[in-house]
Amino acid sequence: MNSPPPLSRGSFAARDWFLLAAVALMWGLSFIFIKIGVDGLAPATVAWLRLAFGAAALALLPGARAPLREGREWWPVIVLGLVWMAVPFVLFAAAEQRIPSALAGMINGSAPLFTMLIATAVSRKGPGKRLALGLVIGFAGVVAVSLPEVTEGGNTAGILMVVAATALYGVAFNLTGPLQARNGTLPVIWRSQLAALILLTPAGLAGLGTSAPTPEGLAATAALGIISTGTAFACFAMLVVRVGAPRASIATYLVPVVAILVGALASEPLRPIALVGIVLVLSGAYLSSSAPQRRPSAKASLAGRRRNRPISTSTTSETGDRSP
Picture 1: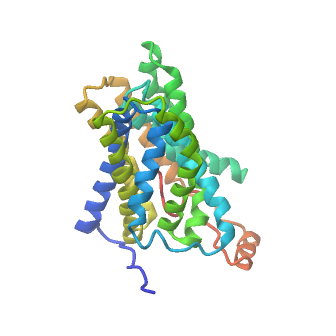
Picture 2: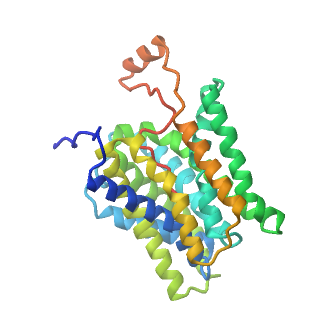
Picture 3: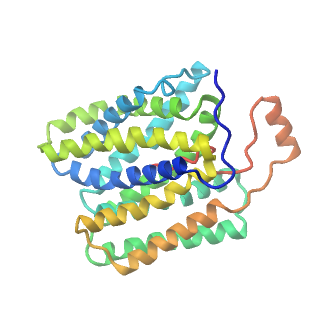
């Protein structure tokens, strides 16, 4: 088996910059694709077709079809498919029937905050000053981003759906690290997509009965699956191998920016306070993600070695995945 290329420790090469920009663009476009898709398709059907197209795109890559190391890994993969894809994808689609795509993209920028908050809660250790400051600033940004929609008679339910979906991403990112460390990034992602696809099949088929699809909606949903759910994950996995997860995760901070720009091109309203809010969200996410983590105790490290599993010194997923 060929070993992967060594991680790039210096400046990004031209190919690294291309992959970084491509991932941010493809994930950032997902919100406008959803917005167009739900104009005629039921939310569950958009999510179901998204997974079908995305899984089909990843299936073309031999690396995605590599077997899992152990048969019992399937149960964690099914849970991951539920909390990372099946439920959040439906929530995003349902929310964008009510709120602008750019707003959904801005709130999604808080995924690193939820990741760190859940990791801190699970570890039962109080956050350090830097992490606490990052969480407070970030969640203040979420409030600022959402405020115009709430105060001007917008749909609060849509905002809560996006917040719930983003919180589930935080759960998923805390679950996926060990799985991907044992089995590789793409095999876990592809099987999670297949599991989510199966789980959503009844709702997706039922949604077809209440849908009135348009050519634009079908095309946007296909692009959502092939580009934003299949190709984007493949490119991100390549970037992680080339530059490492922490530096590859820079792409996730660019996603809300792309969503804002695309929403503006689609003539969606954008309030100044929302721009201030997204700066706070991204600043808080950066502070939270870069906060130093406590090293495990010698006893925990010894136990980890006995189980033949590495003990992580960071609560951030090794893969850095924070997909929309």
